[in-house]
Length: 267
Image 1 (cartoon, rainbow, N blue to C red):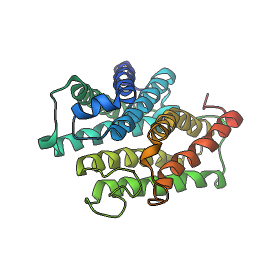
Image 2: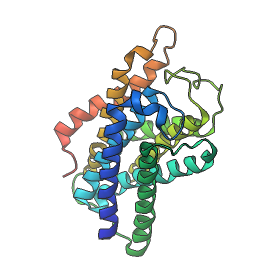
Image 3: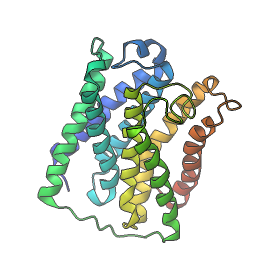
């Protein structure tokens, strides 16, 4: 398995994301004006949902800490931290670090990236096995994973490459107009989510995929909760694309709740 240093850094990610996410989720109106870049209250609470989801994911991975069980969700976490830090660097001229909440976001990403770099070094040094004993899922059961990667991966690539004014960027799906900074940040989040599931194209361990789903479930819960809190921003009659925003999380989240009851959470 990876080193204790990697594990401690993953726990530290859980703590930092937990504190950051709680503040952003509970006080979006107050913290939006002083965040690391120009965002609205709904964007702030959504980023808080990412952070709370990452906190749960990092905690459950560090607690279980068995490479063949947790590797795919660690891939997501590592890609998220590195990707979001790159976005900050590319838009550094728009970065605002006057308020402690902005520094906390930056520090969380720096620790996340450090955990990723040390984790990658550990993997290359140790080469832990991904073989996990236990039940496997069928090719038919892997169809949702393919569909998830295609749909979420498309959203990620679109967010990473689209320009302002392109279809869907002017409150067509997300109910508010995003800056390019915010659009790229959302793109990194979705693209990292998609790439984290790619290993299950060939890894058919049921326990591993259920752990990944359980670790990522916090993201679904908190981001969906944020959308319901700001439900008034959605105008489904004039902008029906907003239904896709809700539907994507509900279509994944509701069936997973039943799957956990039937198959467990990977342990």
